[in-house]
Image (cartoon, rainbow, N blue to C red; front, side):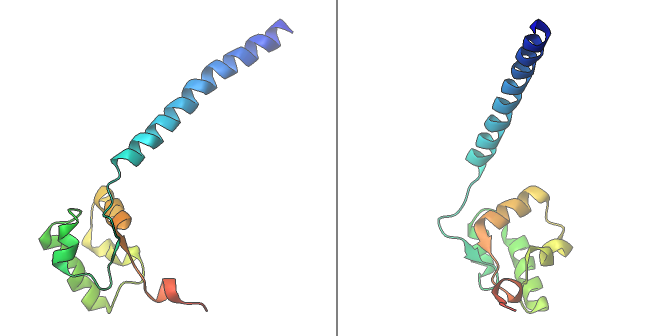
Length: 108
């Protein structure tokens, strides 16, 4: 019985700090998330509007708009892969924009 109590105590001693650490990092990541007041639609936004979010500079915003024109519109964020946008910047772009294309509007 003493061994069982010792194992149980040890398990709790290990689980509580691990759980607390996980919660703290989630809260920290959430607090670092910076969104615009209204998400912009990537299939209609201008380069200047996109750059004004602070997520991308004007040069990259222009490349995104050019790619949109070349593709005839974005279906999803995977369409942006060829621009090699860094993962952290891409995540911020997703927080601040939407894509309403065939993939999201289709009811088929």
